[in-house]
Image (cartoon, rainbow, N blue to C red; front, side, top):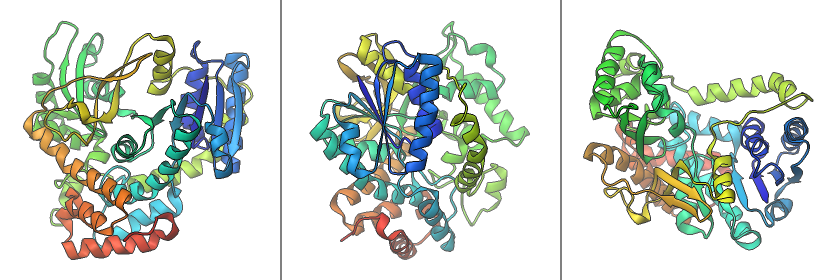
Length: 440
């Protein structure tokens, strides 16, 4: 078996996913191909993974590195699984541009990697690279499964699923921890064991539709009571999501700092007090990037140069998917898939949706969910509109679709006029320069 990791310079994430594979008997002797365009980060990841391989896996895995576009096909050749964790343009210059240009127009963001003007621009510079990946995969490993972890998840996975022949699953970290996070923060830890749940929607806006304890008792009445009480009595880091419970009736998968900017409710210049009221961390993602860059100097010693480094299997889905497909022992995930089969009946068939999926040797089997509560489908549609238009812009290279995506973005449209949105988009395109293709 061969596992190719695109963006292997993401050292910490490579440790989690590939370390997980080394912890898994059916995967531990795989050939691992590390691919990146940054020589230093690629070398660091190879050193780290080689240490883990020796320490927990008796050196069974075969690890090779492939640097640069000229070696990409070799990295992909005959791969069974391709894990994608790239970031095109990085923090400097592209994330800085995504935040600083909109600020000039009075548009503030928290994360900017999923929706909003930041998510739109990130998609537009990433899809051309993933298109090249797809061409190579179709040529040298056409049967491989492409496990996409790169954001914006719904737009990038949706592009691959609709416009390439690559078998693609979009994977996130938030589904696995959603209900546990909620129950712990509401002091309901005693209901964790044996709980049953149903989560469906779109990436970063999947809904905890049902949650019952081991005895089948519906936990939502108590959750709703405690969530309202907690938001009224204290400042905390999850106020937006608990407000969703009060306003829309359900908890959402991704964090409050993310969901603060996926709608038209909380980041409003006319109501600046909302930022403080809901404890919203503006410019959170750039702060994280700066902290990670600085922290890597210390972390590099702990990971790359630690000859005693070990690893325990994490909750990341990738190794469990590979294991299920290899052993034919079924495993359930929350996956991002095309809604072609109408798994969510009141969302478009061309949307990329996040639903329960069964995995086995025959591949991916998305589960039928039915209709979402109408208010939840409506919330998802405000994001899907932007996703579909951004993909359309990337495929057609028509600038008008970028304008339209930005004008339909809930946060952007709630703050700026159509004329200012167009000016901002033009300025962002100019600022990104060669990181973006030419648009008509």
